[in-house]
Image 1 (cartoon, rainbow, N blue to C red):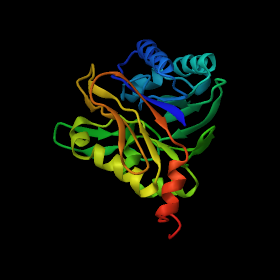
Image 2 (cartoon, rainbow, N blue to C red; image 1 turned 60 degrees about the horizontal axis):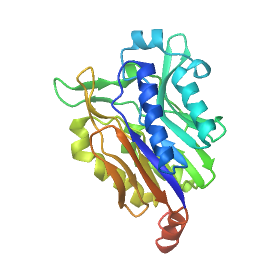
Image 3 (tube, rainbow, N blue to C red; image 1 turned 120 degrees about the vertical axis):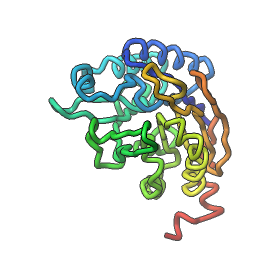
Image 4 (cartoon, one colour; image 1 turned 135 degrees about the vertical axis):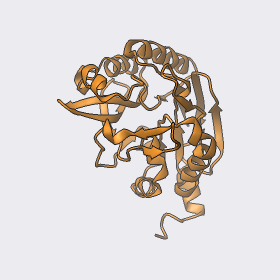
Length: 265
């Protein structure tokens, strides 16, 4: 068994403010005996204006938020997944990047969001992530001390083939840090998360942005940790905070042996 925590934020457009409150919530998780903490999508900077982002954002090695979290991981000997950071990889190129940090404060791997959220929900609610970010090209996973973790971000959740590839590659856990809109979250968030858990017999770790942000955008919240049989182990609805549960790393393989659906493909 090991302890996993998901942090829920209502990030703003100030990196240092977001870092301070994230650090406080990580320390709260440490007091709850956590081994592995996950933060939501765009934890460090809730901003989508490309011109502003190009002016503010840095390469990974110079990212203030990342360097602060790396120090915290090393100090408390815990693993941390920063759900995503906005990273500048070229003069005019940004990516939405999830970063896994080990207990020694070293970056183990990173994943760039593949599926861009380009949708028109209504005349007033439209999103075009591809105008801001360059899409990632590679599915990523990494070994934890307790098994293999598959990485995804938010809108990836709607592409089940990606999750099948991760589970077939031996992943027992999948991270889905998100900033789901309130509109789509009400309709689909719970169902999609439970489906990805059940069909792949994986634990789902889904830290989320939640609340009404400084710019008026509303995110759904409802951070969750879900077992491989689709049971919601813990959920945080709206407020900023942290949820922590104990995880049985033997359960995914046990369920896969009972219902061998992954082998039959």
